Image (cartoon, rainbow, N blue to C red; front, side, top):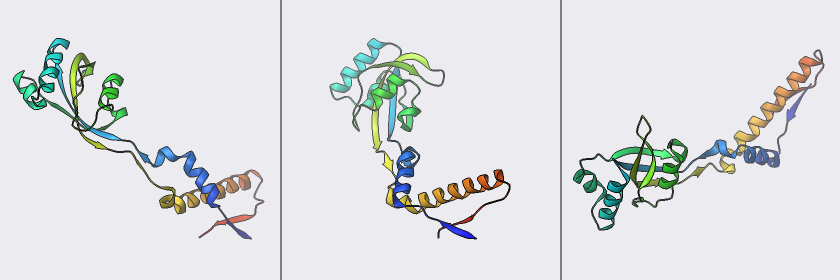
Length: 163
């Protein structure tokens, strides 16, 4: 005899809350950086930017390149000090000189960072996922019953998923 597996809204909500991170896309930022040969050059460049020289113009004046890190989550920036500095900025804002590790070789240096875009964290709402959560829980319960059935030598009450 088969019986239906019922999953309450409260159980689905608990499962959603327990796995909320799974349904969250972290905040991302489009970050640019100019890496300087020394801290003094970075400080002077920061002063020029404060005096209304553009980020790109400062790089060009010094023969340096603006490196585009792309749209990254905080965890996508390898140096924690650089990540903290980038995620403390508002869109369009330029950092003070930041000591850190930069580039593919993660060499020590000093940089100025600029955030050109901020994409806020996105969380899929429970209401959007409720049916999926109930289906997932029902399937988990059926599988648990099947494991118990196998261990008990075949004695079981068959369950079926609720539609």
